[in-house]
Length: 78
Image (tube, rainbow, N blue to C red; front, side, top):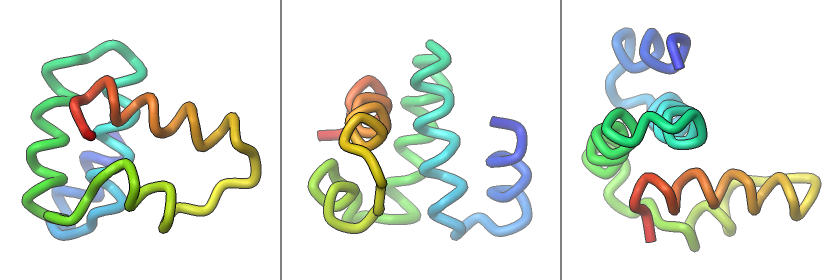
């Protein structure tokens, strides 16, 4: 999470860092951080959705994609 925060601090429009922070905080059980990170992600990337992630973020294994999607679901993304 700390590296994502550094990336966001250096470049607030870096949506990849916002996605990493949201997913990492969510899976680590830091609900408040994950929800706040998701709000910031939505500002930086208004079109973010679970469908967008499936279509745009490549993964080699279905289980990896499901784990990533679950992180965003826990943060509140639909």
